[in-house]
Length: 81
Image 1 (spheres, rainbow, N blue to C red):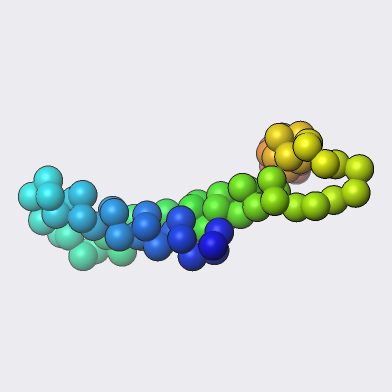
Image 2 (cartoon, one colour):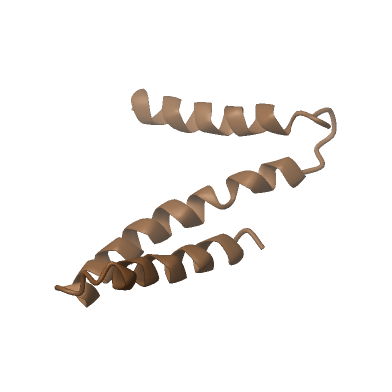
């Protein structure tokens, strides 16, 4: 569900909103660039809610703490590199 549902809906919504705004100048090139950028972001972010479903010993009811830990570790590795 996390690997398919969220990215597929986002990929369908982006071109639809652009077409509804009637901004069709360079549509295919712009959508290709946006789709690749969004694919990386949304595909990676869609796995964050999966942390709330993990059944780890000693961490029952602490899914928010696990999500905070993930963000903290990623940010610290980026800042301290």
